[in-house]
Image 1 (tube, rainbow, N blue to C red):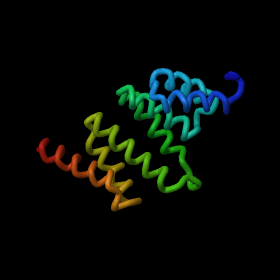
Image 2: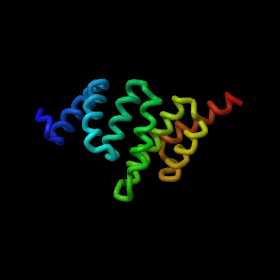
Image 3: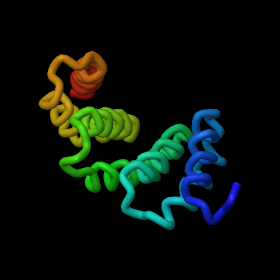
Length: 131
């Protein structure tokens, strides 16, 4: 891999990600992110690696910054995916009130989304148990 070629580095990092070698993918994406620190997709990949490594506290800022850096050219599906991931992550961090905010943002985009409905049921059950 030509370390000066961003496309080649991205292809390598994406291959490692697809192989689910999370620690190596994390290192590769961190290097690429340093060159383009505002890229929503790179931030997402950095967050995903940390999420898969169960580094939840570390993953959250990457996903939040990725969401913040999205713009009107991104499709609703991209926003929906971000809301789902952030909701799941906040639940793992036991931050249910914040999770609900992202859950409802997702439901506002797609009220019939099965994954969001399942998450909502789980969150409602957790909240009723905690009362």
